Length: 117
Image 1 (cartoon, one colour):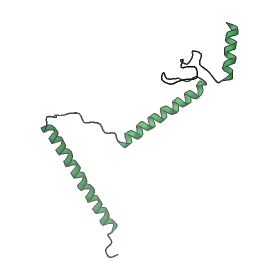
Image 2 (spheres, one colour):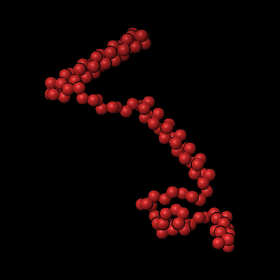
Image 3 (cartoon, one colour):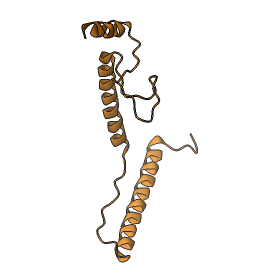
Image 4 (cartoon, helix red, strand yellow):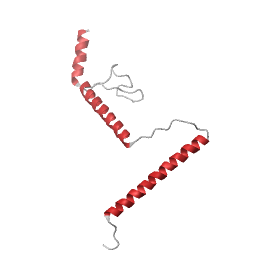
């Protein structure tokens, strides 16, 4: 055990290094704000910084939205929204104006509609 450091000593050294790094960062922030004010910056709003928890929260929100959208889309059947810059199978026409549907029941419904007209 000669020459080895104890876990307590290593923890104390790590904590002291962390405290000194934190103090240096705080001093750098104070100097930055002082130079900003000296340069005529005044009390400008700070740029918001994205935090990890904020990013994870945003990702959870988007995932829930995507899951809800997927559930709704699965209930729609053949109907899908086609963007204006996306080529579609029916020559770029909007959905609902003669769009191709792969569901065979839709053909029966169309022919029934033609017979009734």
